[in-house]
Amino acid sequence: MVKQRSRSLFYIAILIFIALICLLFFLYSSFFYIDKISISGTEKVSESEVLRLSDLSLGTNIFKVNNRLCARAIEIHPLIKSAQVIRRLPREIKITVEERKQWALMPYHDNFLVLDEEGVCIDRVINLPAGHYCLITVDKPPEEVNLGHAIATEGVQMVAEIYQLLPQEDEEQISEFHYDSDNNEILIYTLRGSEIKFGNLERLEEKVALINQVFQIEEKLEEEGTGVLQYIDLRFAGQPALQIK
Image (cartoon, rainbow, N blue to C red; front, side, top):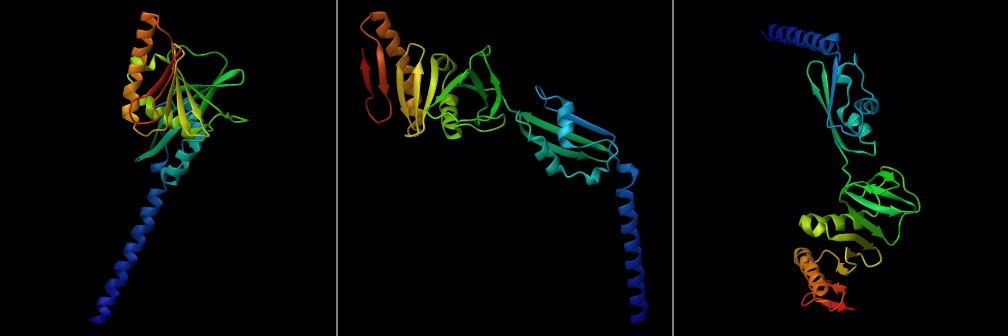
């Protein structure tokens, strides 16, 4: 009885082994050779460039594709924020990319750096592009800038948090955000030339709400002809200090 059971287990093991071998041969057969690679999410980056970066090609076995490595290779491109590579059995690979969006401009020497919300440089332009963009200046610009490199990330992220809370009508009355890296503070300049000492991100919502009042003060002073707002200091709690000239 014991010998018969051992023999049965041996035969079962042989059958399982043969089945696994057959399955392995099937998985790496031409049935799973890639015959379609679809790419979505591209606007500025060409599909051919995404395909080149992925190093994928038709006729490759779909199980030999390392999804994570392919995605990382695509994300090397300075305009691509993230990439996802998915297998669609039996023979299709789907690539989805998210491109970095132009959000801010930073003066740099004789041109402008185009930044996304993470402070990554995605382009350099000579003239200001059409449309309304956040203009950011820094006290210590980098000596060298390459596409895909992050610039003044802490300052850009601070500005982004402020900017996200601003109503559009307030955004349009701001000419510049300046990052003071020594004090880790933001200065805001209005179209009328007033300086808003915003400071850090403490009491963020409270200070953002006060920005609209700054525009009202500017407008009132202009209408009455009683002076020009030079600066207003929002860095400290309580009544903001201001100076009129």
